[in-house]
Image 1: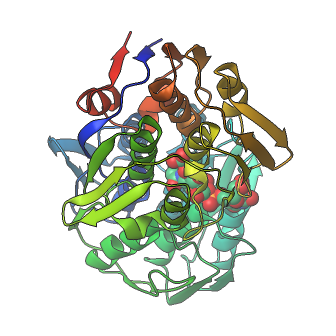
Image 2 (image 1 turned 180 degrees about the vertical axis):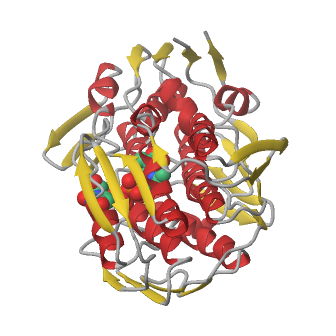
Length: 416
Ligand code: EPZ
């Protein structure tokens, strides 16, 4: 298994090109199931999770080709409506094929995704929403068996709490349902708006982007389109933390401040300097970092996918920070590893108290999930001495060319 070795203490200087958003690309690839026409997606990063989604779509009959370095071309007709456990268990976002399969073929057998490191992550909101649209859902032997004999019909659905995936699954299904669907308490992440833009380019009629109320008027059929994916706001926020924790100055090319939501406010409050230019966000830190309290919330609140990275930054800030994880029930697995590097963190249920220390010390550490793995890389970049991060396959799921991007800014980092 690959490991990454970092010699810490070097300020990052230079620029980093922000790749296309992983969490926009995944539902957009699932939209390829909604038409036999060709769907072209541009600004698509080269990530393990996207290769997994391509593998899943291929066994449904949708061929996914990388026709240019950053372009995916999807085409083909659905020949199989079963999403098998051995693929779904690798990536929970596989559940996003359920809505499109049901809308197009009126039946689907999709493995239940099962839990993952950060929580049980059920899909009950996806299923109850589809039932409201006329689907019949049965669970047997670990699979969701969904049918809609008379096709899906529009419905008014209120989510009890915000779910990104459930919002996306129901947008995909509603695009081909008969009539109007209204999603209330819908997720407002930028990736939702990106999906709506693409679905509208394919012939859907979605309004309300950016609000928590989406209206989708279903079409009889959808046609092909070409869509450029938005930049990855989590990658941008992650590298902003890298520039801040090393005390360097980095231009995040393509990053957009609006996509960062409360993360921007918390970085500024912590003492990070961020200037928006036409090229992107220039991030630096001239003075000390100070402790900042954070609570993760749905967008535009502080992104849960930035919690681990921000915790590392707070580990070397002056003073204490209270970090509360309100989205997932078990997203503090980076804490024991950071503690081994000298961080002072106490977890009490959903909150962690971080008391800043002057400097962390390098150590061998182990990645446990995608974002936690980068929080260890950030610690290694700032620490005194050498850090070896193992199980970096977690990192490769969601970050493209990490060593290259960091080494180009002066980091002493290599994959071993
Ligand atoms: C998406 O996951 C992202 N993944 C996650 O990013 C992100 O952390 C999460 O949204 C929250 O922003 C993709 O977009 C592929 P949710 P998703 O449905 O859709 C519970 C990363 O690092 N819930 O908004 O699975 C759920 O357990 C990944 O890139 C139900 O109870 O998240 C969680 O506690 C990690 N029932 C909360 O809601 C449901 O039916 C939010 O989940 C659905 C969700």
